[in-house]
Every structure is written in structure tokens, then in C-alpha cells.
Amino acid sequence: MYIPPSSLQDQNIQKKNKFRLGFIFLFMVSVGLNVFLLFFDQDNNVAVASLPQNAEISFQSKGEESQPEAAEPENELPKQFPQSFAAATIKPVSFTTSAERTPGGKNIQSLNFKIRNSLNYSVCREITRENGCAALSAHIGRLMAWFMDIKKSMRNGDSLDVVYQQLDGPEQFKILKLSYASKRFGKTFEAYYYDGFDKGNGGYFDKEGNEIAQRIVEAQSPIREYIEITSLPGDFRKGSGGHSGTDFKAEEGTPVYSGFAGKVTRTNWNVRANGYCIEIDHPKLGIKTLYLHLSRVKVKRGQTIKAGQQIAESGNTGRTFAPHLHYEIQNRKNKKRVYSPFTSKYHKSYVRRIPQEHLNAFLKNVSLYNSAIKKS
Image (cartoon, rainbow, N blue to C red; front, top):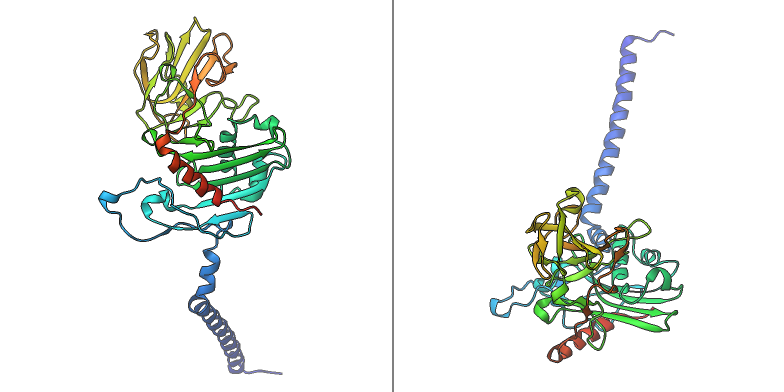
């Protein structure tokens, strides 16, 4: 059958028109759905988007500016926690506070769980890796290292309570309260953070106000003013020996001293990893001491050093995530043999005690932290 050319053209035009009408119809439906979701379903979207994975509740600011004469310390904690808490294992803590009292605008949370397999495994069952479970586990482990060898002494079924604050920066977390019920030792170990005395040099204390961490006597200390000890020998690093020194968190430019008489054997080697650094030989003691990540070196190779002499300033050079001093004590003949300044014979140590006039304020903090833990 013969079909005139004009009829074929009309059929093609009709097909194209149908396709265009279908496309326009789908486009209008899509636009309509987007408009509906944008304007009419906004409340639901906000509710879902504002709920973090771990049910975290941020500090809520009053929006008030502090007056200069009534300015409060940046790290001061809230006066009270709310009376009720969620029943979940991870319990958010919410309260109203000024911006000055919430570093980084972050929140305070609590965890309550049983140990299973290892500390890191147990923590990462409670919060995700994306939310920093490995970092939180490391902070908990560093504090618990003052109580026990966690690799040998932890037992399945041990209980751990922790109150912590999330921070901006590489550290990510600040532990405020830790309580560990040990089956092996048949007791509960507790630590509470407090920085209300000693020029704000905070630390962790038991309920009686005795500091958990030891301190080196000033005459032998490599650094006399520091914020806290963030790592110990054998701590959380790759290899069988772990971390080889003691890390003192300190502001850049803090004076660094040699605790013993000796001679400088080298400076600034392997700078990419160590940063500016010093090694001092102490032949009478049979050891060498190393000082890494310095901002300034004040001695030279071959120089004789007196005990207590300033040799450098602390810094943040080399492979490091935050300003600190890495202090290391090595056996003079075997550098792989490393000593802890707190358990070896080379340093004398002591623990601070909260002065009587600050004890009531500390005990209020203890009560505050304890109120944040609600057993599941």
C-alpha cells in the first residue's frame, strides 16, 4: 500500500509530540515532589538530620556575652547535670551553658559497658570508628596504664564507666571521669579530672584528692610545667615494644631541662620524624636521654651539661600531632632497652594532692561526673 510522504511526516510529528508530552509530565511530577519535600516535609528532614549516630546532644548556648569582670575560665564545667538521662548505653548529657565554658562547642557524654576481648574492641562496639572510637580507646588506655598493665590484667566482664568531652583538634577527647571494676584485682579504680589549682595544670585524682599520675621531682624533671602526660613507654604503638618514651603535653616554648649531668652526643638527627632533638650521654648512670619535637635547641654536640640545666624549648616539630615533649631514657649499651621515668631507679617521683582549700570544689566535680553515669 502506498502512503504519501505527508502522512509519514504527520505520524513522526505525532510520535515526537507524545514523547515530549511524556517527558514534560515526568518533569512536572519530579518538580512537584521536590517542592513538597522542601517546603512541606522540612520538619521531618531536620529531625532526622539533627540526630547524630550516637545520640549526642551538644551544649546549648544562652547567647549571652560574658562581662569582663565576670569572665569564667574557658574550660570550666557546668554547675549541674540534668536529673534524667536516656536509658541507652551511650547517654547524652545536656545542659545550658555559655560559649566560654564549652571549648569548641562540643558535648559531654557517658559510656557504661562490659569489657569483651580487648579495650579497643569494647569501645568500638559502643561508638563507631568514624566517631573516633580508636582515639577514645587510646585516651582511656593511657589513663588506665597508671592502674594496671591493660594487656595482661583486663578480663572479660570487667565494667567500665567513662564520662568524656569531645574536643576540636587532634586529641578529639578529654576524659573527665573513669571508673573501672576489675575482676582480677577485686576492686574499682577511679579517676576524676580537675584543674582548679596549681595554675590550671590539670590532672586525674582519686576521690580523696590524690593524683593518679606520678610526677618527677623538679630537680630531675625534663619539663617542669606541662599540661598532662599523654603517653608512656610501651603505649599504643606498632611493634612489640610500643611507644619508646614519655610524652608531656606542653605549650610550645616551655623550658626543657637535663635531669642529669652528661655530654651532648648529637642534635637534630632524623629531623623529619624527630623534629629538633637532643641526645645526652650519662656514663655514670649507664643511660642516654633523648628529647624530641623541640622548637629550639640551646646546646651543641660535645657540650658538657650540668644536672638541671636548660637545654631546649618544647615544640611541635617533626612527626607529631600536637605540641609536646617526647622524653626517652635508653640503656647506654642497648638503645632498644627503654626505661620508664616513673618505675625505674633513675628518677625520683611523687604525686600531688589537692589542697584542702580546693577539696570542696573538687568533690562537687566528683558528684557532677558521677551523676552523669546511669547504669543500663
